[in-house]
Length: 593
Image 1 (cartoon, rainbow, N blue to C red):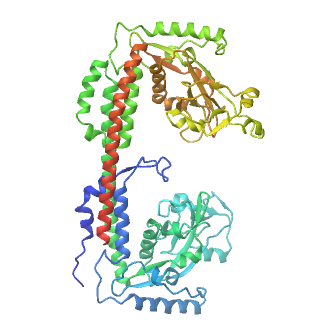
Image 2 (cartoon, rainbow, N blue to C red; image 1 turned 90 degrees about the vertical axis):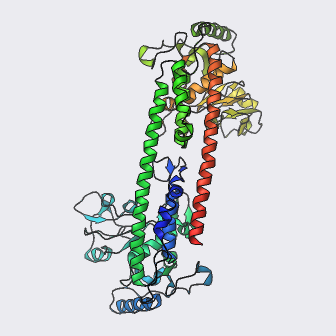
Image 3 (cartoon, rainbow, N blue to C red; image 1 turned 60 degrees about the vertical axis):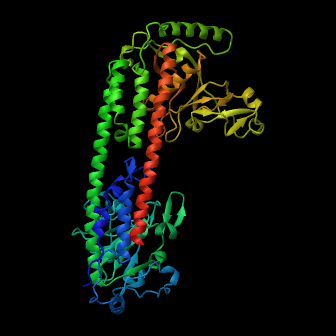
């Protein structure tokens, strides 16, 4: 046997920091996982291991092994015998492999081959009726291989099968199941059947029965490598939310074939290295969880500060370790939420006994609100219930007051003019806000506009600049979002328009940051089925801790200062992540070079 000059373990041990530190924040759409991060480095390491495996760079070759060409002759001879015995159908000759399909140089003794030439059978599953009765025939479903293993907790049960179908669809050890109709992320996923329990092959999964002279696990490695490299996405037909790969394209897949002993060695080494990856992943996730717990505990000490003076002391201790504490997007977001929580609790800045108390501010607002109603500027509103003790979630500083949003603002909504009336939309005179446009902090323009006639003949109200707009319902993150009009605009019925009586810009900013802080709580007040909604009444009744106006000025200034620090941390994290990704990709390129 040739000397082993390749040390795949060194890929992990010598560069462990690169593999484990390349961690990215995951898109909220996710990919079937609740985790908010992606272990990019370890994921790339897994891809690299498979890539090295199929290129013949993971284990040394043995010159005494039979060549892949001799192996293919044995496969062909056995398939001819199986056809003669009526055990398999005669297969069509596959196209010759073109030079452009040979993606890399093969080791000596290896051969390029189409997957179909290694299969005794490729077939669709049984599509008869299923139920949940466990004394029926256990049968695979598309969910059965959701984690790339055969999960017997996610099988179905066929009601009845003829003797002929029982024999045909019964799975054999070494059979590969392939998800050929699925989302882009899942199409091409596989699992191998090695279980002692009886199982039948069901619809929506292709069955690949590999010839006995070929190691199924090696073929499975090739398929996994192709999936991770994006090959299945490239050859799939795409529809909305679903991709599919037909049998012909599966059979035409080109793989690099080593000798049978080499296949065994490769599978063993891949299993060994994937186990190391599993251990790295577990250690990294444990470290992430421990870090998150530490951040949570330290941020809790900030919230538990008795007053602004004690907060300043606790903040000083935490800020000494900013670079080591706030190293993930989640931790920085948690810091932002803590800042907002402290702001509305009256702990972010010191109170000034000389400030005009919030009770006086509320009296002035009530008087102004009454005058505006008499002048017809706003609608006269009903008296709101007094804030009861259960709604007061924490003790406020001496000069703060609990109040309801409707006591300090006029809250209204809008409407959508009939889409069938072109006269309402053809003349684009007035900006018109939809709930989806609440995702930005300010609105300077709108996607759609309505005519003056629409304002006159429908329930669309026009609100002035400075009006706050809250989404009352909408898909995803929309519900509960708040924005501010910088233009005159109407809204649709999915938005609540908040016109604060006190015109002070810092007062408006304070109310906005309260809504930012209370985003999840406000969303939880929604009611309904598949798409829960808020309403104007719920928004109007929102309970708000109100500081003196002068303190509101100090609060928003401090929030701006601390949010700038958070943004700096986030930018630093982004740069660090980009560096780690570049290091990871460079390491992969070097290993394959």
